[in-house]
Length: 398
Image (cartoon, one colour):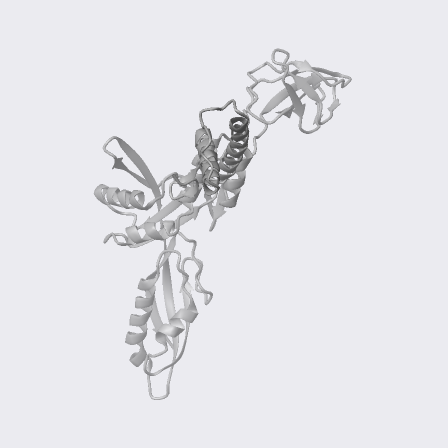
């Protein structure tokens, strides 16, 4: 049997395999010299004891090699080896956090209780440290935040932190009127591996594009936008407050039937990665359920996009021999086509209109104003990712 790195992983020999291999090698050397094979059934002989000692040492080397191999395998690594392996794929271990609690203090009027003052749960002996100075009011009352002495899930029920440890003159009592917010302990290997799977699922290429493609293929969907927060912390993405590991979906039009809503929900569910939640900033506009595996219903939530209707004016300069009447029809057809090509979140830029109109016969130059509600302006219209610029009305003038 092959030992070491194989197509099945890392294979190590048993102690008896090592002993047999040593005897085989010894017999081969003896045979080369015309000598008889050794008696393998005499472990108490001098030669048998030497073979056993060498075999034990070789087996120990194989075990070290196995440990090194396991330390680089995400499925087998533990402790610091797992943390190192996860760091290589961009998923560092989460450090344990401190439990925190709001403490109520009484004492002399206007007394300053300094940061790092210590209180204790007399039942458990667990100590809590004041995180910032607390100035008691004129009645001798105040509140302050305490953290546990050590990181991890330290529990403190209501009214259990009652002993003052620090010798602060004038500080009379301490208690907690609310239970502690329990900190996070060191991640277990299983938790770290699960978080890696969730993170890598989020980072799969084309998540947003896949959802956009699915929704754009639905005949009644006019426009769609998808934002993605691939991190495990809250983020502001293009002006939207996004929850950790989440997507935000916006669609238009906002007047569709219930079956159409269900069709959109199914398309979103079919393309979203596992372990991904929804960001619905300010509350959902619409939701629908999707049956999953015939045993549960998944709630899919999303928001309507916003329509920016533009009152568009094109000011043209005709070439010699051409009149305004020669330009109105071709110019307005191309302008309408350009608006129709805009997707949700696409900007409306004069530069792009110049390119679209460059081949209109008789047109020397053109300029534009856009009014999406704030008055006519020559500035480009740059919408939010969930806003869709559409043509409300247009005119062509000299």
